[in-house]
Amino acid sequence: MNLVLKVNGTVYEVDIPPTARLLDVLRDTLGLTGTKEGCGEGECGACTVIVGGKAVNSCVMLAVQARGKEVVTVEGLAADGELDDLQQKFVEHGAVQCGFCTPGMLMSAKALLMRNPLPSEQDIRVALAGNLCRCTGYSAIVSAVRAASGQETAAIEVPGESGTLPAAESSPDVEAKVGAVMTTADLPGYQAGQ
Amino acid sequence: MVTTEVVTPATVIELSEALAGATPRTRLLAGGTDLVRAIRRPGDEPDVLIDLSQLAELAYVRREGETLHIGATTTFTELETHPLVREHAPCLAQAASQVGSVQIRNVATLAGNVANASPCADGATALMALAADVTTVDGAGHSSTRPLRDVLVGSGATTLESDEAIVEFSFPALGTAHRSAFVKIGSRTAVTVARLSVALVVRFDPAAGVLADVRIGLGAVGQTAFRDPELEKVLEGQPADEESARLFAEGCVAAVRRSIPGRYSLPYKQHAAVGLAYDAWNALALCPPCEPDWG
Image (tube, rainbow over all chains, first blue to last red; front, side):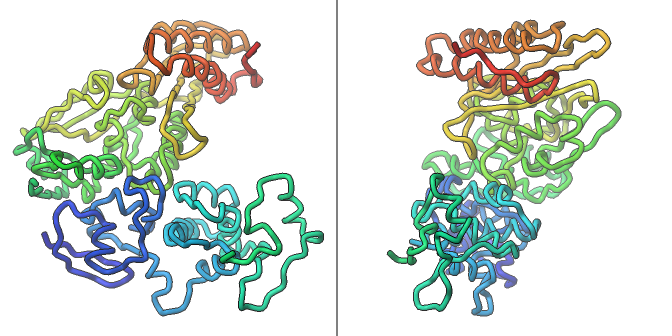
């Protein structure tokens, strides 16, 4: 069947099987492979895109359901070749490790910031509850989203970039986490890729 | 491999026309969070898929007199945040907020939750306690209304005909004298499927100091969400105090035993029922928070 879709501001007319999932049309028909398939059943959030201003799992949505609505994928965040501020904050905060969950995390966070520019930490955690990450833990990701909303938290150093590490003994953020749950991203000496 | 035809009605009249040719293989696509997985199983492809995504007229919440009306394709995100639902059906707003993740709630609909007929459907459990009616249209253009308990008849089983679609849920709007709550327990604290859920509605009469109009929906503890009249009798006419909380918890355990005798999950669920009963009771905020004696 023929379907007109608007993705990242561009209108596409595609010829697809009637029961094609939005995920498959984005990846296979339009070649937008930034969106990932993880579980394929709406659990992990790797396939999250924004449809009509809302975060959705594109693996449990048919392409026909996006008819007439604006679709934004991770490619739409860096449309002009420059990283979106949210992406930049993910980099600065070491919120990316293997990267598979990252497009989904970004799109869930973006949808949150679009409707709530100043979210609390709880708001962020609720918005990201449907996105699973098996590498970094969630603290660095939450910090990145907070930073993107202008609520700055201490960033960690990224290799190859100049920056100042927060000293563990003088950082209440780090001290507060000792004895609670710590992730690699909380470690002062941690470098992405280790 | 069946080739599926997709029909996208834009009005209820067009929906009825689409239903006229429906067969047992025809499926209605609302949010798709359950159905998209189901129709991808080889052999389960529908002949016709009626896509409701453009049927904007069925996404609404409105109050008419003492009745709250909720359109079939209202999403859980809309239910969770809608002022009328939060005011007149708090247990439904609370249930909606605990369904899946943000991504699921943004598209999953109340009608989909009911029509999918999962025994642990949070929306259905809340609607049971609200004594909801279901209004449908069929392929002949007829509209009819019946109680939700007459629609849900088993796990994955409803009395909905192949050419019948839910268009609305309606129930008495809860007033200021009413309190309600929905609580559930699953394998984790968020984004979880209920292992046991309780929706509780009561009216508190401060002059007499007793509970009335007690309605309790139980989920994930039988073939479908249901109300248990014996359990409701336990609270009816009782004062709003700690002893009533204890009786309610005891009643919940008995209800679980009645519903799933001998089931492997019974030992867990009757224990969980105590904690959930207290959670539901405390959420009503009728008396200072109390805790079970786990002794």
